[in-house]
Length: 452
Image 1: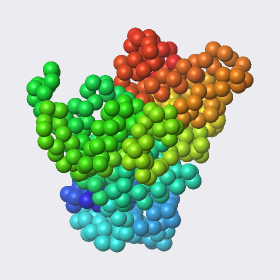
Image 2: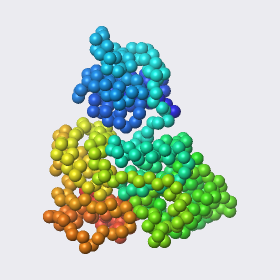
Image 3: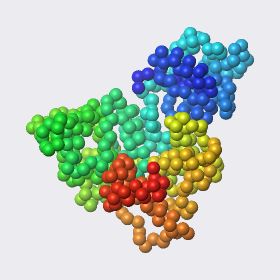
Image 4: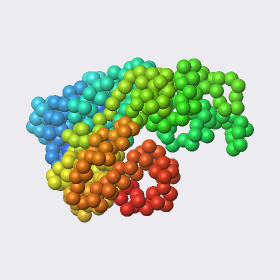
């Protein structure tokens, strides 16, 4: 949060490491890319205060990147690495918008002087750096959401995030925290649906040693752990009514009392809550307290389904495929146009999480540098289903349109299992209990349906 950052682009690892070592000694956070495509992806992930790129890259040239940065990221100075004595190329780079240039072999003192001058000119604000897992997407829906996040982050008001499972509700909460004055404090995330009812009070408020059977040591609880920061209550609609009452009191009094203690302790916590359920409907059904609903829903943010922003799928796909290549030390792969078109016409009942799982599986199945449509292993016939962000079941009398009953049923089963896993943060034991089946049966179904 309090450091400058730099993007280093060169296809030679030794050159990248030399530059990174020099800049890190100047207390810059360094990020690296080995090609134009990797650089474009990196530039989309976060802002940088300085960028330096080589001229010759495997899939293009640095001049393209200079022009891209000059047009899209004008607040970030960009420098060019040129061949020794090639003044003509250096002048072309300056004309294209480069801040300065440095020749190979790189003189580290010249590089340090260049970076110091660049950082005096940069207009990229440090506090606007985004988290590692940022919300990706350039669609209008995502642009509106990010704009709303930036506005609400400046306040201390509680925020309720509504959206289907897999849309990125926790990423929204993390972005709110990261852009808020509480960014230096802790961010604590908890799935309310995954905590056993008899342990909720202890988990939220803590307990003292010996306060009940099994309490072998003091426990601070989630509220104390989040003191000075943000507490994210995912699937808050799953809280029992008794726990809702206790949560309401803590929010009102801004103090918690451990199980086994007589006195309350003050806490300073911002609450961000989320659910795929319609809380207003739950209030009308008397399954959620109205007074707590008003406390949590001061500011309401809606996260769009992936099917509602299909234009973001290419960027998301590139991000995930690059991520797997880096993590697994494997060559990068790309989607064929047919595979990409197939993804953009798929309804994605599991949203972004489902896209990630599909691409992870396809990445391992691809036989060369391209992922074919068949590698995606999507159902042959899928009918987009309506959003199920409320508690109303599908109309049983509605006509079913399919020419493959087995695949249609598998798609329904996949959605139910994925949703249960999402709601329990991929705890298969809790998900099996939620679905009313045994752990062994769930494991078998996950293997059968290709759910990782």
